[in-house]
Image 1: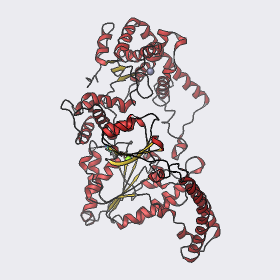
Image 2: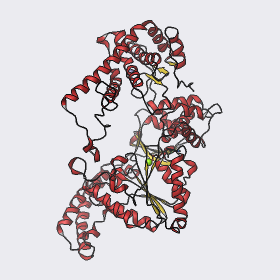
Image 3: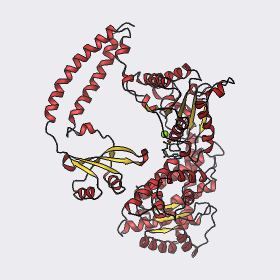
Image 4: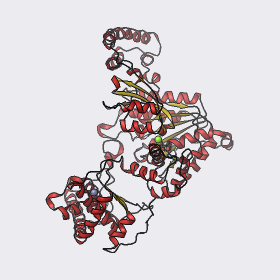
Length: 628
Ligand code: ADP
Ligand code: MG
Ligand code: ZN
């Protein structure tokens, strides 16, 4: 190919400009030796203290007179890999040093160095020199070599971003609760181990398997387990890493990846988040993304380019198979799809058993009870749950994890960190009435999930919380269940209004109202549960700006839009009227419950029901589950 100046300028200029900023950036970092430690991730101080208590911190380097620290910690989420993170320390934390001593953590302080200025100057000088010689080199290489500019600008190659693990160390035993997926993929292991079995009878070994499922269900883990069981290397890359700012990088990464894989066959190539590259071509605002399309084309070409029997099997993962380009899914590419769903109760128990293997559990803990309490949790949630419980156990200096820690960890995983309770005040009373309002409707309305507990201890964003026990079967929800949920969600606001009056209601109900409106709207537009009749007027709302979604937005006339709005209003108004009535009917019961709640901070579901039963009839609920 002939060397072209236009291409050279096109490529080098942006690269050099960007390079210059990187160069400057390297010296802009005040403590000069902090740059080399480049701990890009941060950890909050509170989290750091927890890690410290749990004995996970191995080393602490203090910088900037003790205002910043680079912390080396073992991260249980990353298979106990050592992780370096940056922690901003509060100015007044003298007790930290004694704590570090007590925990026997090695630490060191680094004074700020003053040679930044010299380096800055040198940097400013060196860059132009590099620039000039760089240009020169580029020019020479380009004109001498037959490869032309392609050779000189092989960005993708030098920054290969895929990872290779010779041995993943993960086995099928480490993956639990997704038996069907495991069974289907067991065959893939045989393809890799004994391909002769299939080729002897003329069978073509599939090239690609697509794992489809929500995040955290164990797709990555499953792919690693296949490599582990077959004893082959594991190459992995994430779809988003293909798509970068330099045009052509994605495609060349695909080439590199397949080349490396061919050299190491038999092996597994794992492409995570394939929807990032594999979205339908020619869609999205602005006619799609050229870079992504080139990458996708390259991927398709590579997949066609090797015979099914070379011993490479490509496993891709996504949670949005609907947006994938049809070309990826046709036979000979990702023609096998395996669903990886959130586990049911039995699956959750098995996953808990896997993750409890290396944890010290108190004898009183029943994994079954935990599995029962965690509908909707994925494998990753459950792993996280046990880990949080272990951290709490270490913090409380207990021998083994007890039910209290598990219970607290569930709350924490679902609703966030616990805050300090409010002091007694008018707003605390208002929050108490708000929560009792939710809980009262949850108890009195037959189709509502039963109350598990009501609490005034803040968590995450919420000042108070009412927990309900969700039913195991989350598949089909009836109209009356939806209306019960809407009424329950309005319980907080209606209590505020009945007790404190219209002018005193607060912003605390904002979140509730958002949910209410969302549910009511879906009843009308998606589930055909209003007077508009059984019509589906809107599909599930996704991001409109990427991929195929753009073209499938539903359309209806203005007059239908107005009728939708009035139907939504009608549903919400009816539910709100009922909620208000219930509050007025049980005024003295509410006063009593609120007094108790303020005194105890938390009332559990059983006690709550017992008190309500003294005043009104409490309906039986099928999914009633004893709390832990
Ligand atoms: P995904 O790739 O589907 O988002 P991962 O495979 O990355 O999920 O799961 C994250 C972590 O959660 C795993 O490393 C594992 O510890 C835990 N996990 C998830 N699913 C399972 C499962 N089915 N069995 C055991 N552990 C699981
Ligand atoms: Mg993953
Ligand atoms: Zn509320």
